[in-house]
Length: 240
View 1 (cartoon, one colour):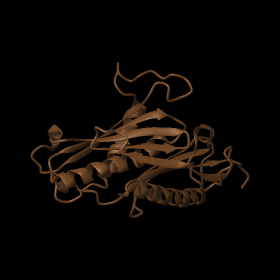
View 2 (cartoon, rainbow, N blue to C red):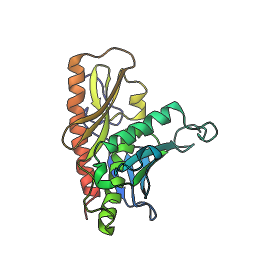
View 3 (cartoon, rainbow, N blue to C red):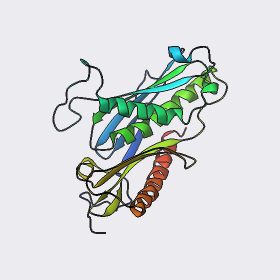
View 4 (cartoon, rainbow, N blue to C red):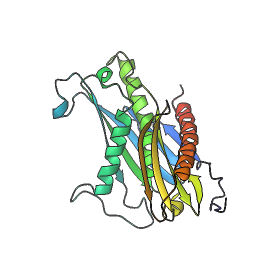
């Protein structure tokens, strides 16, 4: 491998990742996820109603909102309140919602909605992946609470879900890109997987040089390593 990472990680190594559950005393489920310098607060709020398009179907719904604090980055970014969320924000929150809905049996949830709010308080690359991984823990805690309260009989979560970035820099495939790597990568890819090893989403772009099928396969192998480590971190956060 020709590329040496600035933080001296190996090409298949995650950044230091920590998930702290129950970070909010008010939300039905919550977690703070820290992935290197990226920090995201994820909360799950339960509402005893569903959106209009889901009414009278006997099904629940899981949706998400994503936002970044103005000084989560090196320079201040404008709050997205005046003209609504940007295209990037809409794309990310739809991705989070899709990813979490993919592992929920909405029949078991009943006609109620779980709202996942992912607020980035510090950004150093991989915020959408961190949001998905942390939101899963918040969702799992909220569903546990619904079962404990007797609101639902069976936990509706059917699998774990986590997300990680992979990429190519100077011909080297690497796992979990920090911002300095993300901003200079030849290829940047985000991969969302279930605990059963199935893909929910693969978002990949050649920013500079097109990538080969061999590099694609190498990135998928690295992603598998990454999400398996993340699943273990999630399980530890959910113990007890």
